[in-house]
Amino acid sequence: MTLKAMKTNKTFNVVKKIIGKRIPSNSTVQTKAEDISSLILHDHEIIKKLILVLKDSKVGITKKKSAYVQFEEALSTHAKAEEESLYVHMKKLEALIVKSYEGDVEHAIASQLMKEIDSLKNTNDDLWMSKVKVLAEITDHHVKEEEKEVLKDARKEFDLEERVEIGREYTKLISLLRGGQNEKNIQTTKIPKLARGRISKR
Ligand SMILES: [Fe+2]
Ligand SMILES: [Fe+2]
Image 1 (tube, rainbow, N blue to C red):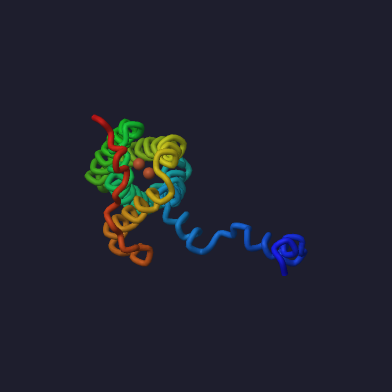
Image 2 (image 1 turned 45 degrees about the horizontal axis):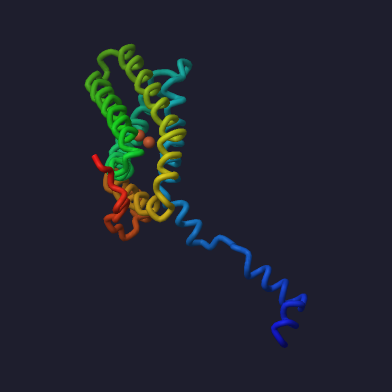
């Protein structure tokens, strides 16, 4: 078949149309799942569900204490991994540095409150509930702002490949902090060469 004949051949054009369509491969799907933005959103969903329990005045102290154990573990490990992966890379870029410091400050406030809550143990349930409610409100505000502004800006400043590299760092840190629970998700993590040449001039 000549080239001209091929171009007018119906079967050839149908095959070309099918081959030319960009069907996402499994590796593309995997890549999106490893994007730091997706990983953070996933962890935020767990944290937000627990916040609803902790803020609910109809929920009793026993159920709240049980939810708080999960909340404290989820939040403290998430915040630490976030600081040591995403925030570290944000600090290399002029456009993101201030937001990363704001995140650090909000994490530190939450961490201080968690220490105070732990020190109360079972001595004063009313004070315990008040501090937990304030912590839940602060965290609620923080995660929503992070989703609306920080992740949006991070998606703008870091391309997908960079976000996957940060995501792999995050997964490794989470796995270490949570005692290997995420082991299956660990990739051979190389230290990213991110933002080379884009380092802030500060
Ligand atoms: Fe955060
Ligand atoms: Fe977060």
